[in-house]
Image (cartoon, rainbow, N blue to C red):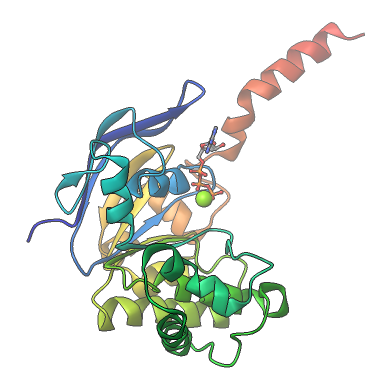
Length: 269
Ligand SMILES: Nc1ncnc2c1ncn2[C@@H]1O[C@H](COP(=O)(O)OP(=O)(O)OP(=O)(O)O)[C@@H](O)[C@H]1O
Ligand SMILES: [Mg+2]
């Protein structure tokens, strides 16, 4: 089977610092591919590259065998219509009702009339269990419901790929489980390919077909959830068990500051 997404030797830097370092992987149609890794490891950057919001300095990103960094803006917009995106921070517009938020992509990308749009929006809201909240504003519903509304908006245009950035962050475990189930159902029932970035280990083991662990901008392991659980990689083990001790050393990130601090202190009387 040909991959639906293929990253080949992709690198990206910010301010001379390599954030994504020579990453390659393939995602297959219908697969739920989970990307996990510590805060700052480059997960959201990877999603921005895969959705064409940023261009890599090196390497190629193919979606449906087309290199998205080489196509015109118009072709990229067309490709993006087949993507759904659920952002790390729900990104609903505060001044619009839930119905209008979900309707936005339909108003922007189709010439459907208002009645048809209203029916589609209600169907999508029903699918994710938000019927009856059409007229509420985002700040009148709970965080979990806002995440679900973001999901309804992501599926408004019947995408074949959905990118999720931390879909369960900030939610209690029960609501997080509900969101995981929705992601799972959408991918199974509608045959959507899902790329899910998450810190949440329950999500990783609930929904993933395959898991990639990112560490300091590199993929250090790609495996099935079962093999990830039994991985011999010490970084993977530290991450999945949330141990403070181990090769992922957060103090390292402060090493330069600590050195500078010590030098300054030594100079001070
Ligand atoms: N636009 C930008 N300009 C400069 N640096 C950036 C930019 N976006 C991200 N970075 C840096 O790139 C690194 C990776 O950021 P990214 O947001 O991809 O991490 P992440 O893995 O998604 O983290 P989190 O789990 O906290 O969301 C961070 O050190 C961040 O400061
Ligand atoms: Mg992020």
